[in-house]
Structure formats: C-alpha cells, structure tokens
Image (cartoon, rainbow, N blue to C red):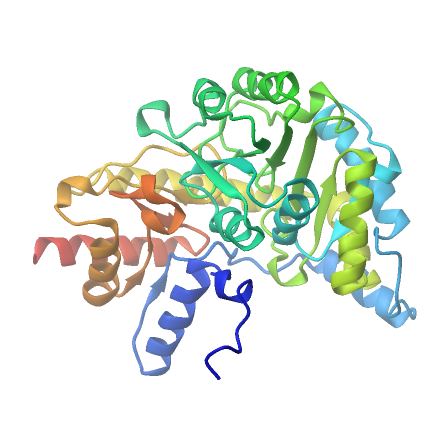
Length: 390
C-alpha cells in the first residue's frame, strides 16, 4: 500500500552505526572475518556484582510495575552521586529514570520545542540528535566542531547561531564522535549564553566517567543545579558496560522532568525494577572493575592514536574522553564514505564515515576502540597493508 506509511514515520532515520553493524553481521555470516570499530559497545561484560543485584531482585519477586519516574531508591542514589560528582544535590522530583539514555533526547525535545523552532546542535554530533529533530519537525542549527579547536564546541559560535526561535542548545562533553572535552570555562560560558537568552541547555554527559586527562569532569549544571535551564542526560551503558540493560537518567527542572516522566509513562510504562537495582549496585558497589576499564581504554587510545599518526595521509588528535577517535583522512584523496567502504572491502575493518555524524564530518572517520588491543592492532595493521597496496 503506497499510502500506508504516515508522514511522521517517513521522517524516521534510525542510527547509522546499527545499519553498518547489520551489514557487517551479514558479511560475517557469509564467512568474512571483520574487525568491529563501528559501534560503541564495550567489549567488557557487565561486572558480576551488578548482575547479581539484578538476579537477587528478580528472585525476590521484583518483576512487576514500578513508578514511571523510577525506583525511589535509585533516584535517591542519583541524588547522592550527583552531589559527589557535580557539586549539588538535586531534589528527588528533578530525577527521572529512563529506558536508556538515548530516549532522553526525544523526551526533552518533544517536551520543550515546538515544530518549526530551533535547536542548536554540535556537528559532528550523535546522530540521534538530528534524527529526533527531524522527527519532531524542529530545525537543527548546526555548530561546527573544528579540528583547530580540538573539536570543542565554541561558545562564540553558539552565540552567533541563536535566533528568536532558538529554544534549546545541545552540548556533548566528552563528545561522540570526536572524544573532545569542552573546558570548564567554555561550559560555564555556554550556560551563561543559555541563561541570558532564556534557552534550555541539554547537556549530554553519558561519557562523564570516561576521561583520560588530568582535568576532572565539569558540568554546566553546577550553575543552576538543574533547576532553571540545564537538563542532564546520563546513562549506565558505557562506563559500566551495561549497553544491553537500557538504563538512563535525566536530571532537570521539576516541571520539565514531570512532563518527560509522563511521556515515559505513555510510551513504555516504566523501567524494570531489577534493572534499576542493578543501576544502584553499579553506582554504590565496588568500582575497581570500572576503573580498570577506563585505564584499559586509555592504553588502547594511546597506542591507536600513535599508530594512526604514522600512516601516510592520516592524522589524528588524541581524544580526552569517551572511546572514539576521529582521524582526518583528507590527504588520502578519499571522501569519508569512500574511505569507510575501502576499509571494509580491502582491510575487512568496519568504521564509520564522519558524515554519519553531520556534514562537517566530511574528511574524517570515526573509530571506536571498544574492542580488545589485539583486535585494534590487527585492524590497524590490515588498514596499513590495504593503503600500501592502493
């Protein structure tokens, strides 16, 4: 039926990394040996004590509905960890538990921005930002992340991008796909811009526990304690190797969080209690394995960046957070898409073209090093050989 799909459904784009993953998995079923650099899924298993907490919860009968806002115990735990990590303790009604952090982007935009209004967003940036804005009929005002600024979002560029229709600014630090970290001074300046213009600030802090430099994580939420302009996106997937658990947290002004909670209630009722018990254990339990993961990512990053910079035609900044690098491949003479296709066909490695993350990603690729050092070394060696045989 030609007219079966609605106009809204026709706007749904999905995420490019999952499309590449599907393609690669089909090739693997045909016998291809491919190294995965395309998706940010930690190769570590969820620590045992977190799994045990969920198991104990299920065995204890916690397999029923709970509050759409989230389990009180988890929200109270979030209050305390926010105090220790960000310097303020939000009210309990400022905290919302969600099925993964990804959906918070949709919840926030749907509850804050009308069709036809503007949202300032980083480019390159996480593809869900763009997909949700298109779905909701809002305008994406893209601010370029420039390599000469170490891919940090520049407050002056944000200020220039503001229009009378701007309702929301999205920032992401540490950043996906570049791994860049916005300085505390820049973050506070961005907050000041949002405050002065009465604009909401959506701070995507999913990679906040994954920083490698001496600089400690800084959130713009310290300026208003998420009571006025700032909304935090956070989740358990990356830092705790819990991608399959689908557990996220939003912190923001009470009236905004209330509406986002009602939308969660409408769409999916609630997050399973046993998943939330696992989340509590992830935060308050033994952190040794978590710290080891971050150290391992740092060691992988150091080796990977050094080796990429030895390859003719490729240059790569050393990222300060997350588990992605964003190499410049312009001197190879290939576009981002051509390079990604070449890498898959000739080197049997799956990477993403920078343009999957926005138009300003042309000339770059994203490599996720959420895989073993053995795979990383094999993959880069394959790439070197393929490029030598061009």
